[in-house]
Image (tube, rainbow, N blue to C red):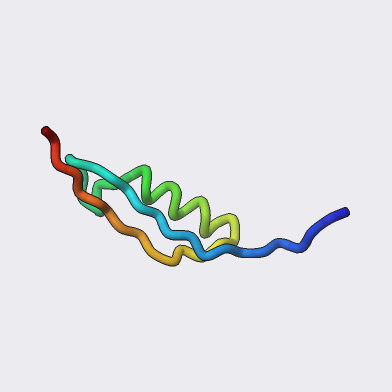
Length: 52
């Protein structure tokens, strides 16, 4: 039994205390891969954490 492909709307959130959105290579890779797979990138954000 095969099922039809159902594209999803996906948000990518990266938590980092050292990176900016432009330097976020892992978030960019995830975004690229999910769109290549046919899904929609709903949002991409970088959450800045604070080092203690």
